[in-house]
Structures are given as C-alpha cells and as structure tokens.
Length: 217
Image (cartoon, rainbow, N blue to C red; front, side, top):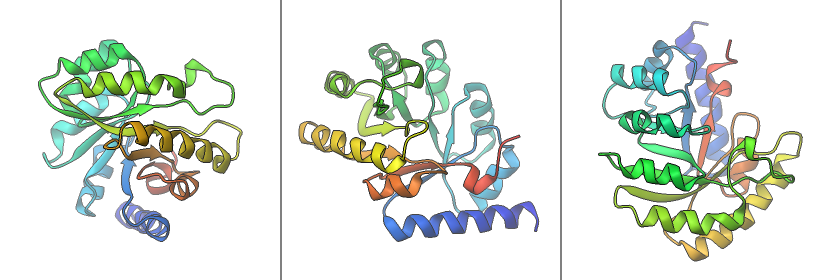
C-alpha cells in the first residue's frame, strides 16, 4: 500500500465513524509535522480543513497550497506570534486570554474563533484554557471586535480520565454558554483517541491527525 492509498483508507474509516454519530460534524485534519506531500494528497481527496500549531511550519505550507484551504490554528498561543499567525490562519481554536483577543483584533483579516475552556478536574493553567466562569467575559470581548467571529467553545480531554466523563462536563458548560451566546453554538472537541466520545456529547468540529496520517516521528 502506497502513501496515497494509506491516507485514503484511513480517511475513509474516520469519516465513516463521524458519519455514524453526527453527519454534520466538521473534520479538521491535523497536519502539523507532516510533509506538504501529505497535505497535497488530502487536498486531492477533497479535504480543505487543515489544523496546525507551529507558526513557521504552517505559514510555509499555506503558501504552497491552493487558496481555498481553511487553516485552523490549535494549541497554545504565544502572544508574540499572533501577528504572524493571523497572516495564514482562518480559524483560531484556542483563545484563552484577553491579550490574545486584542492582538488578533489588530489583524487585517477576519478570523473565526473558539474559546478554550479547561475541563480538567484539577485546573492547571499549563494545559491551556480558562475556567468556565471566565468564558462570558472573553466572549463579550470577542463580540466587540469587528474582525472576529465567535464560533463557540473548544476543549481538550484531561489526561488519564475517561473522555466520556470529561466531555459530559463540557456539554453542560456549553449548554449554559449557548443560552448566553446563542450564535456561538459550535463545539471543537475530540482528537484521534477520543473523537467518538466527543461527538456523542455534541462536538461539531473534531481535530484528527494520527488516525488519518499515522504516528508522528
């Protein structure tokens, strides 16, 4: 089996699993650390949503792929990288600080953004995301900026915990959030090891890398 066939088979399997739970969910293929040749294969297979978290690497890839690709930034944001990130990223999945919002506000292009909420049982700021009680303040700030569109929430399942329990907590947080911000109804949650659990608890966007492209070197 060559690389094209391998990626095509993996992609078909993942999309079938997504279809079985929520046919409307958006797949974002996490392409960080993988070569441009893999992204070109994915593009030929019809994929247009790619996820990256390294600014320089993503910037180089974005310059080589067609303009209809939608680039998603995920992972923790370094404030000093935002000006550069804003040049290539269309969707930002990990806003968790007012300073980030103000930096993206200075961009000349529009961005869709998710607020990252920390759903760990024991809050650890190193893991990224804010406590649920901080979401409203950040959401109002995003809504006050003309070039930012608030999409909803993003979360990463805690380490060492059943993802179903974690995503059940997230679903309750999102339920309350949507009452206050009804247009921000999307939920970015779930990766290769737990995306099915995330979908069962309402995820609308899943970020999947290794299940499609294999393990990173």
